[in-house]
Amino acid sequence: MVARLAELVELAASRRFSAVVAVTPQIASRFEGVNRRTVVLYNYPHAEDLAGDMGALWEARKRAITYVGTITPQRGIREMVQAMGLLPPSLSATLEIAGDHIPEEIMQLPSWSRVHFHGVLDLAHTYQLLRQVRAGLVCEHPIPTFTESMPVKIFEYMGAGLPVIASNFPLWRHLLDGVGCALFVDPTNVREIAEAVEYLLCNSSEAEAMGRRGQEAVANHFNWNTQSQKLVDLYNTLASSTCVA
Image 1 (cartoon, rainbow, N blue to C red):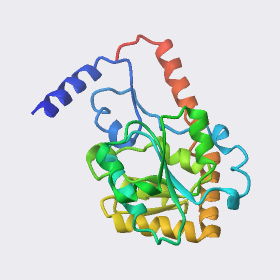
Image 2: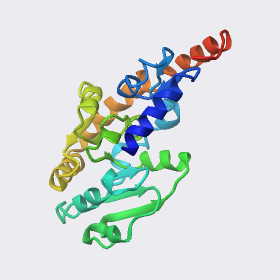
Image 3: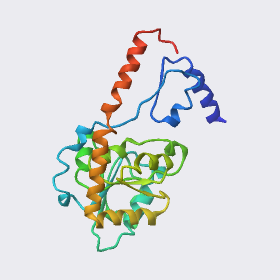
Image 4: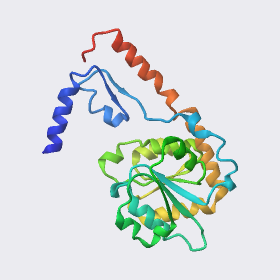
């Protein structure tokens, strides 16, 4: 009932807004019927900030994977950490996490010994971390908040030349399947996540090729330069008209 009330208030307010900016077509579809100036503006990164020197040679990168961002159960922190415990003991690998507070029960998991927690990093140090590892994780649980989202971390991973291990959401598959830069997993299945991690860490040439394809896609398409003009055009439209939706 509270969610429905919030939705009604949001839609009523949106009728009066000068414009509505949404980050996916699915979100935009909620507002297009109440505000004719609804614009989809994808939250893509600045490709030039990510690329750098690709972290030197691929083989010089750590045998590690990473997760960067907000840390909650719904974003798959438990499954990602548990997956590290299913890797073969002979595969020396770490999970590099950058984000906010880690719950105490997660740090008590046996596989926590294979995790390196960096805490909160600024953007420059986050990008530096991405250029040092060999894959990026985004294993968010299948709830509406996530299945209809397009996390910027996906494109940050790609822009840094990393193959992506991602939740098997239809929207994400549609977006990335043609790029050939991602492995899709059931984010609630620890075994699937572990198998994807093992595959990328044990198949270095393929992982590097996937990373190159992702980086090329960001350089050519999934970057802020392809979106910024839409925002400028919207501002110009508002500046030249009465700012009432």
